[in-house]
Length: 161
Image (spheres, rainbow, N blue to C red):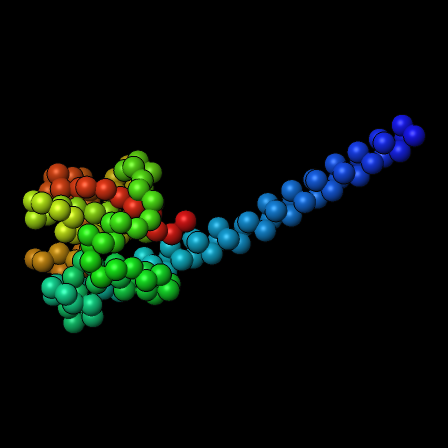
């Protein structure tokens, strides 16, 4: 009888190890899909580089900050509001030291509320670069190390997990 109990425990342990291995392997494609989505969002945003600024715009002939973010995420079928203040209500808030590509950055540029949104383009040696639509230069890549952006930063959100 005791021999059968050990055999049963052995079979349960083998089944557990087998299931655990399958779960680990099945989670890999999910991470890969998310990385692909991140790349797609960023690549879509970059197609707007040098596009001129137009308030309320959402085309290559003129775009604003929320239009850029909206179009970039729409490319992967993630529909966001067309307003930076409303976008800031979505996702999970993260700290600056947790930023990854495709996270959203929100700024207070009018002195009273969130009025600007950008997409993290890369994080390199602790410096955060982001793509966004500016009123003066159109769609460009900037750094969080620039005094203006550092002083007006409000929060960061992650939309793609």
